[in-house]
Image (cartoon, rainbow, N blue to C red; front, side, top):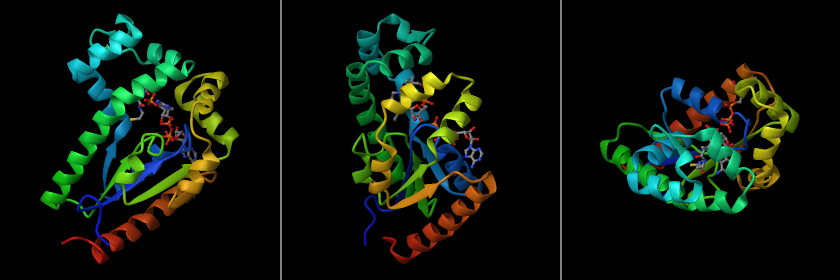
Length: 211
Ligand SMILES: CC(C)(COP(=O)(O)OP(=O)(O)OC[C@H]1O[C@@H](n2cnc3c(N)ncnc32)[C@H](O)[C@@H]1O)[C@@H](O)C(=O)NCCC(=O)NCCS
Ligand SMILES: Nc1ncnc2c1ncn2[C@@H]1O[C@H](COP(=O)(O)OP(=O)(O)OP(=O)(O)O)[C@@H](O)[C@H]1O
């Protein structure tokens, strides 16, 4: 087997509050390279002047405050307007995917890691799944997810439900997954699952690497 970008690449995805960022922090603690696509998207949206112009055209000047993305303003619009959400995604996703692939190539060239993990909320929705070797889907019981997000972001149940409504059905994501993590247990249970996967990926990277 040849890896798609000359290095083993693994996506971690899941709906809001599933625990994908926590999974990725554990991978990082073990020494893995993790690319956070959602952070990258925000950086590109703030640094790419051409993209900023296009975003302002859709959302108005209020989309930025002092050069910084007005996240609350944009979130309020896109999570109640499917058309604007799609327009924003069609501007942002290709740029994010391009940058991640060039990072893969750099890591493969430098051989600085055995494998790369990408955390992204919208791997299947953006078509990015076709660029990855394996995809981990994280999920938890809906009430558990709602409670965790309300606590983490100090937001209302309605705000969480609004985002959930605009996301792919978690059951569908589970069907598309290569590896599935049910994250209803405690943090230590999750950490142990990640430890197991970390050693598995280390083995896969050596067995089937391009080098
Ligand atoms: C709307 C924005 C400004 C809200 O920022 P905020 O800091 O509140 O949320 P954050 O980016 O951390 O996302 C938190 C969660 O919301 C959900 N979410 C975010 N964007 C989307 C989206 N376009 N569709 C569905 N769910 C989304 C995901 O579950 C994500 O994990 C931001 O999410 C954004 O710019 N989204 C559009 C770009 C995009 O598609 N990003 C995600 C993939 S690269
Ligand atoms: N097994 C667990 N036990 C207790 N708390 C957890 C567990 N897993 C995750 N959490 C907590 O739940 C919250 C949501 O987790 P996390 O941020 O990893 O989810 P996410 O899928 O990245 O969410 P988002 O889509 O909003 O970015 C965080 O506060 C995290 O610390």
